Length: 461
Image (cartoon, rainbow, N blue to C red; front, side, top):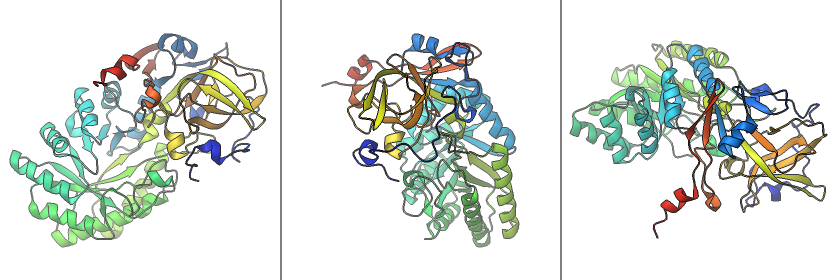
């Protein structure tokens, strides 16, 4: 369902919540699948993470604040690395990137994909080995390509004939041979939101398989023999739970591999199947375990390679939000609680669409819990909203909170590690929140809170 243009408030008057949302037996209970792995409800009723009380975190760092469980993030890196041995696992820089996170994923042995000059600069500043960086993007500038070539980025995923020409000219000028993958639009639409399904034909990414552009791009690179074509790349969407789309995608892209072999006598040694694996935002979400995904994808690739009489290429995957998404929750303070004529109760917090635009942008669903204390009050169906001057400023559309929630309480929203801080804005001139990493009973600031002075520093009028 598409969100109402004026906001979900106008689209769902009178709603008593979605059909999948059930009244909890215990409003204080936590569903482990939604939360970072060290989150607990302590004896005093407050949430703790890595042994630290959220009340102490709020007192030290203020609210809103993104809280990153470092052990959780690292363990998810290892889960994918161990489930996919001999596969290059790429962390999605666009989901959330800062120098501290780059160092974490580097130490855990992952690769990193970036899609802008700024993301590349962050990766290099943090010491990420450039040969383990993949550079995405449908409109890379000459300056961005130049930086990537000069840095020795390991894979550049080319996305247009213009980019091939630009990169070829740079390579000739510098006497180097950049390694590239061709992004193929395979015509598979993942079962996900329209705007994050990235492989159907009517979209801006990649070379069309059906129209012959993907084959033409590969032949152009091979015939010019300036860039080193390592393989093909496919990405069918985000927040994907059903692996059937990968089967269709792999069949089509490996058929192109066979076509290239038959036409040019070259078997490309690599294949990037993308990923975009889903996470649990609410009780309706049931993501697959990495080992289950690995078995399914391996079976798909092995079977298709056998059918096409191809050697099995070295695989790459891009789990997307599945690594950092569940490792972070956002902590807010309640400012007002407003019952609107029995229609619903609005719980207003001190953040909103400036720190999480996904509810408004994608009609995304989130969960929430009272974090600063436990409650014996009855569950109350509430809507958690932000402080912005916008009726669509909704953080959590429908959630059961205790009926005695009040100003000054802390509310935590899990699953905010991906695309929340990275898509954050200064709407209404609100400074963006900090990111705090917690581990072994210690908290450290890894991205500081913006200040009004930061906002004014950019205003040179």
